[in-house]
Image (tube, rainbow, N blue to C red; front, side, top):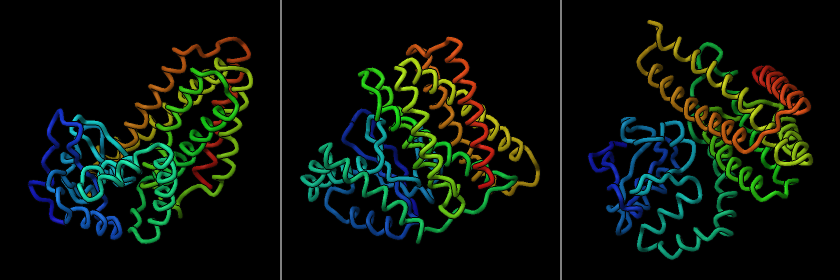
Length: 314
């Protein structure tokens, strides 16, 4: 797709209704769907950006290419990013012919069903979308461990929500579940199914237990668990970013590969920033700090390290 000046133009500031739509032009199904939207009356009020082919600057703040390709994303004029089913609902509401459908799709019970269906589509999309090239210098194993880790993180919060009854803890877990689910979708776009850990069922069970067991003891135990996990994840992502920086500092990296590595670095850095924020929020919320909590945190950290080491290889 040739990206025109209109496609690169930023959405008008301050208008929450003005949309910039980021789509995967390398996916034939996605491209046909977007083409159908763009033929509709009113489509010229939106900005359409092919995230697979555009200049990285066209993606705007807080969005890199990998994240935009991972899942349908739109940006409102006020800068708010919507992803997945919420993005489709926003597009439909922006187009006169589908406005009523968009309002129905935005209704939370319907939106939840659509999100499940869309996640299923993303898995099927791997069958026809070109697979990403392998990463250099062992990064494939690192990214496989990232995918396993984000899978485990999603299930930590699902486990906590299955047990916890404290309102503040449930709000904490629900918000962080949404963030970790977004991370998982982003990593899924980078790590194709053929290169993911074969032990994902075990990581789901381990994650659920890591969230559910401390929830039995109470909110402070869950916060201590989250803080321990996020301390480990912070260091894990930092190590990968250092590896990418070393690759970029070398003389043998082709320009196209360097651009790909920079995009990956931005993705990992954004995930790391979120995890640091989660850690700090857990500590501020009152993470337990007694001898038992410290022993549990050490066990969680050691378990995280062992899981990463295993996920790198299987």
